[in-house]
Length: 448
Image 1: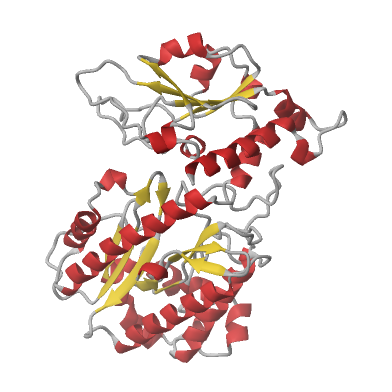
Image 2 (image 1 turned 45 degrees about the vertical axis):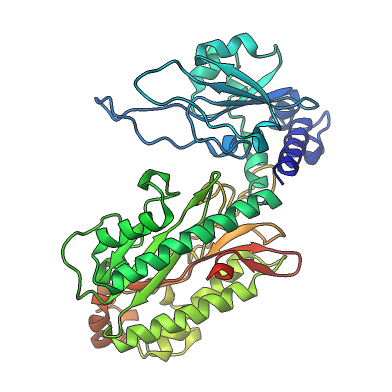
C-alpha cells in the first residue's frame, strides 16, 4: 500500500505546483502564480532544539508534511520532490559518539525514494538541483542559506493546498490508524484494570505504557489520566501518586502512534460504588456516542454532528433531572455548552489535531466554528476517506457552573444534584472513525 500512497502524494504535489486545481490563468492571483512558478519542493523534518539556557534536548517531533512522505521521526531529514522525477530522501546521519544517530531504513518505504546519505546538513546544497524550489519546514534561515527566496519559504497557497488534502487518507494511512487504535486499546484495557485494582494516576499511566510497550515521548500526545474531580479538567496533565484505592471514576484519554499516525481514544470507567446518577450518565453517553458515529456519512456537515451532540447532552440533562425545562429550551439558552464546552471532535492523522479542520477548499477558505461553540475544531463537510474523532463529553466543571448559580440559567439547574456530582468530574467517550463511500468505519470499536 505504501507505493500507492506515494503515487497519490506525487499526484497531489504535482497538481498543487501546476495550479490546475485552481484553474490557473494569466489573470490568476499572485499566490496561485507563485505555486505555478515552483519547480520543486524541499520538505524538512525539522531541527533539534534545547531548553532555554540548557543543553537538554526538547523531545523532537517531525513536521507533519514530512511524515506524510516518510515514517521517519528524526531531525534534519529532507524529502526533495520534483514532478516527473523519483522523490529523493536526503538522509543526514552525523558522525557522533554522544548520541545514536543511525536511521532504521526498511525497504518497504525506502525503495520508493532515491537515497542520498549526508554527514551534515551543510552538505545539502551540493546535491540540490538549481531549480525554483520551495521550502516547507520550521527553519527559514536554513532555507535562505540554500538560496531559497523568502516568498518560496512555506508559501501560503501551497501550504493551504497540502493541508486541505491531508484530511483524505490513503489505504496505507488507514491501515496505520487501524493498527494505532488496536495497540492503544490494549493500553486502555490495562489502564482500566489498574484503576479497578486501586491504582493511582501514575500507576494507571505506567500500566498503559507497559501494555503498549511505548515510551512517554513516543505517545502522539500527553496521556490524560484523570481520577474523580480531575476528569472535569479537559486536558488534565498531571499524574497524582497519592493512594487512590477509594477513587470512583477514571477518565483516560490516550493513544498510540504507528509509522507517524496517531490514535486518540478516550474511555471513562466507574466502580460499582460510584454515584448511581453518574453511572447512569456514563451509560447514556456511551449510547449517545455510538448514535453519533452511526450518523456519519458522506455529505454531512461536521457542524451538524456537533449540534446532534449538544442535543444529546441536553436530553441527558433532562433525563437525569440535572436541568429543568425542555430540550429545545436548554439548547436555546446554550445550557449544554456548560456541560460540554469542547467540540465533538477533530480531524485525525499524522497530527492528533490534524491540519485543515476549518478549511473549505484548496485555496484556504476558512469556515470558523459557530459562535455558540467556538472550540469546535472541524467545520468540514464529510467526504470519503476522511478520518476524525467523535468524542462527546459531559462534565461538572466548577468554574463554568458555579457562576450560573445566581443567574437566570442557574434557575434551571438542580444544584443539589450538581453539588453531589462535582467529585465525579466528568465523562468523555471517544472513537476514531473513517468516512466510507456509504457511511462510516469505526476504527476503534472493531478491535474491542
